[in-house]
Amino acid sequence: MKPISDLTFGRRVMALIEDLARHSDEPGRITRLYLSPSHRAAAETTQAMMSAAGLKSHIDALGSVIGRLEGANPDAPALIIGSHIDSVVDAGRYDGNLGVVLGIVVAEALKAEGIVPSCPIEVIAFGDEENARFPTNLSTSYALSGRYNPAWLDGKDAQGVSLRDALATFRGDPEGIAALTRDPARYRGYLEVHIEQGPLLEAEGLSVGIVTAINGATRARATVIGEAGHAGTVPMNMRRDALAAVAEMTLAVERIGAKHPDTVATVGVALVAPGAINVIPARVDFTLDARSPDDAVRHAMVDDIVQECSAIAERRGVAFRFEPFMDSAATPMDQGLMREFERGVKSLDLPVRHLSSGAGHDAVAMASLCPVAMLFVRCKGGVSHNPAESITIEDADIAACVLIETVKKIVTAQS
Image (cartoon, rainbow, N blue to C red):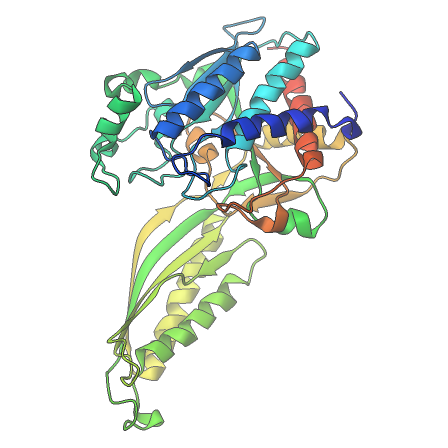
């Protein structure tokens, strides 16, 4: 293992990231939506990177780029390293792309050291993690476990283009989706390295952290109905102000969400009616997003929020309705693979920090195929989904060294 101060791996990571950043559907900023022309260009660039690293590579029926190194025993369960190369609109360079290029750097490092892995290694660049163009859910990674929803093909983007038609333009193959399903017995695990997208590692002065779980999430729509009235004539003590009630409910959501270190709860949307400056609000529709790495804790948190909001509504003389529309279970990381990441971190004399992920990742879908683990990398200010997204060469180098060491331990063990 090269010393951290050498920065060879960090410079290589940054060079590959910059190569991918060239591909965008909009001049002057990075926008690389699933199945767009820039996604095709980035996929072909990624395939060329994989081939140069000694991986046998191809672009599959849904647009994911697959690179494979067979290893000494091609029949042994394979290790997958991956992430995604699609982006949100006006994105940063590192979200997703970092995990893909690190997989390629691992392959290059093994080749440079003359290490023949005991099992196959696959590096995968998924194309539809952000779900920013079509109404899908991690479609390209769920396809590997046979959980692709055929209804996704008929979903349309903002311009009315169906995913099916976009896939044909991309030179994909809807008829080839079923063949993408993998046999779980053929895979020993999936490793994903990703920028943290949060501020904890930076606040604690740490380069990397090991993910314990990807948070489960509850989403709900809520409605409060009061009574409209003239803002100048109805006395304060006789009002049934829906917005004032929701303001109190929002503070309750904030307080309850802060009860546990790893829980969060957010009111992200509030629509006020009738919405006139001189009219007491009669109705407010708002949303709740509640997340936790522990599903039981999350469900209890939501119950507390509903009970408190109901009490506020009763006290203020307004009606309260609560309608959950999503309940996504938490995805715990595999303890064995987490320990391998811990060994990799400790091999560099770095402290081990565990943290949960508040955002979803391809690892959620891959957990339905095989054991999964994730490594987070510090990002400046915790900023993500934004051109200001940034990591240092030093942290990129550390992440590469940790991943290389982790992979070496896994693939040089007896199969």
